[in-house]
Length: 257
Image (cartoon, rainbow, N blue to C red; front, side, top):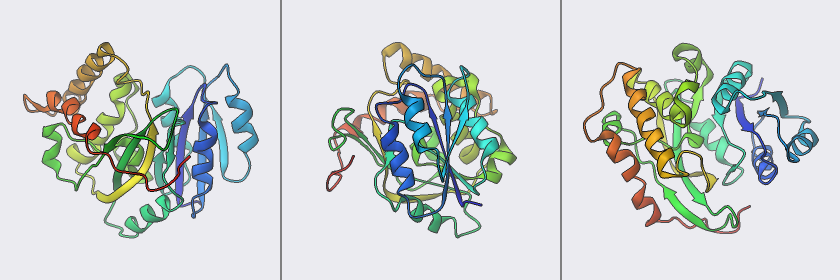
């Protein structure tokens, strides 16, 4: 059985999925890579079908959205540790999972996270934002803090114990899951102080003002459905925390994909 299961939901991802696949395959540890495929109108199927040997497995999921796809992948995961890497994202180098594995050698740690950079969609060597997470303190959630979800690794038993994603929350489903795990249930976590994932710009939740307003409403709901109450400033600070990320940019230190 693999130590890791990496989940990648994809629909119409032909432009970037090959880079995502390669970055997982190049990791120095044994990995089960579950690609949850949604019906596409581009060449996505041909690309992932060509890669579906060895560690890449394909699950088909039509029309039920990203978070239902991820839930399906979690249920099929065989690895003790589950990570999520979207089709637009890639690991910064081939040591990411090895470094994560060292953290989980401590049986008292049930999750971990690190830093992330947003890179230009057209030029993956150009950093647009640098998301430095910082060491974990539970009360930071009151100040709009959250770790970057693509860097968040969790033991599979935690999903069994505390539940899967809530698809009704749309793009706030990842925020709700981390709020539930780390804040409500106090799942143990560790911070890896280095860039782990490169994410291409163009995400859904920040695509427009209307999308940001909707996401803010869903963020608020994420607290309420967990019987939690944010501070009056919490959900205002959450988007504002992104502003310094555009100013302080971490160089990648060489060519990336």
